[in-house]
Image (cartoon, rainbow, N blue to C red; front, side):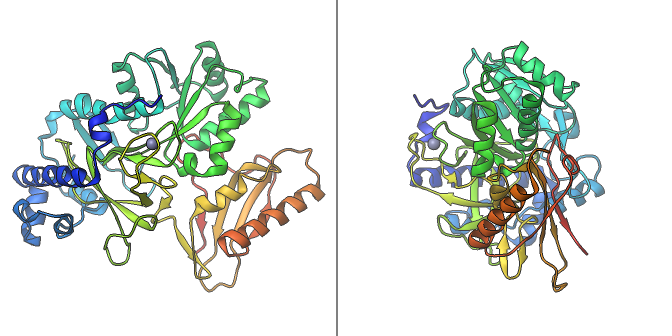
Length: 437
Ligand SMILES: [Zn+2]
């Protein structure tokens, strides 16, 4: 049976969403102009005011907010910058971005944002995943400044779900804890969840025979990469659901039990999918850059924020009954990760899908993108899945993989087999793409 947190909002007709989102967007715009020097300046320069925003086309007159601007603001006005709408001492919880692309961004949450808005946001997830108060959730997570599972955990606590905090443990101890505590739900990045699954096999722990019934993954596109999802579901004998968001805009995407794409919380966000070149909206099913506006946040709402994610919106009603739009394939990739090679736009997640379909390869890989015009081919480094795989078997596997990539992605990669265990393993977000300069 499908359960919803706010059925009246999750099944609104599309025209109603737009009306509601426009009304909340105008209200947020008025609020940021009144309370944030950053936005006051920005919107004055652009000559836009809340009264101008009557239609979705009008929203596009409002300038984007970018991460670079937020970082600059924090550098000039430590510690939070001049974009938040509340004074620094209003924060009851702080996080910072992982800083994988540079300097970390500090993100404060007021009491209302942490206890009310964050709870509201993640309650949609808890209901959509079918998590109940009788569930036992294990978080194999390093508790620190990285936001990752903090919000989902806090929300589940408030719903009476049992939380087992799995910080400060080795992976081996975590696996034993999952069994000993009778965990029914486990959360992690797809990479780490697969690593735990493989490790369990080596340790003789029968995860598919355990009580775990749901695996929630976030931080990477894995849950929406078909071969990765099916690998996770096989290793764990559980359903794998996607969770999408970022520290600064907070979490907005969740998968329902029907697993038909990642729903986007249109009750609390105004999403746009735009052509990266022209900034005009793309049609349903087309790849666009995701631009998001917070409709509820009070500490540091972001309006028309360039998330850097690439998505494909689908507006048809889901079989679960929700009318919240869906991101087909979840977050397909990061705008900065997508690369053009030989005139073809390539998403690393598409290559990952074919690697994970090959049982002779381990789950790790690396993409080495040569400099444009160097004449070199794109190299994919893979490891054999086990020492027992013969050279002949590997050769056949590589041939089949290359054929798949040539046929589906339209380029011919160079495949390099490296020693088992020589590619790095990751507990958090993985780094697998390298560009030669
Ligand atoms: Zn659904």
